[in-house]
Length: 228
Ligand SMILES: *Cc1c(COP(=O)(O)O)cnc(C)c1O
Image (cartoon, rainbow, N blue to C red; front, side):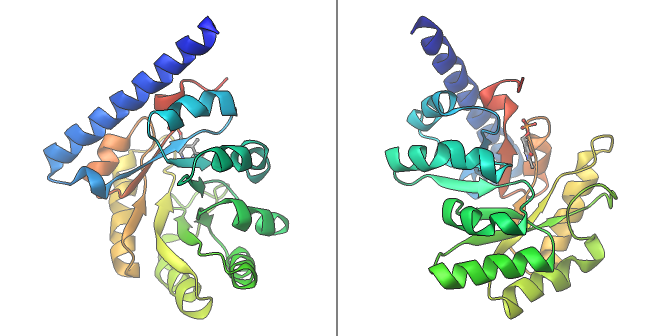
């Protein structure tokens, strides 16, 4: 029990520190804090580590693995109404049914096959799901995402042909490069694609991302602490 309390206090304190930084950065850059959604990335942490953050008022969470999320979020969602869960990692088509049932937002749509599978499942179940198109802004061969050049046409296909609710674009910049360049590129691509959402910025660089137009930041370790 004393150990639990210690964990509670630190995650809650770190969440508050992140909120303060968001507010400060918004003020510095002339943005409204309400324009920037904080997605708390809870991957690798179990329900007992997540609950204090929910109790502190956080409602939007991100997970990068469908299987892992299935192990903790159905119960957490049942406990607290109004949780919004984002898939921020790769989706295999054989997991589409489970992903569409559990997640509210899928940020990692990066190829036609998966976009079609999501659209079909949404139609079948009547689920109102929001998607983001993941863009490989660094054009890294090993990384998921559509290329910058294909982004506008892919987003239009998802929206117009498949009827998906495309809210925006998402990127994960290359580790060794200046993230600001990638955030600026994603902002430009979102403008060209005619979508509002820009999901960019993580623990190390969310303040930079806010200055460059992020509407969603995905913050894990700065809230939950280091991942083992
Ligand atoms: C893990 C992860 C994050 C959060 O990373 P932190 O550096 O812990 O904030 C954000 N986005 C994606 C896609 C991730 O997989």
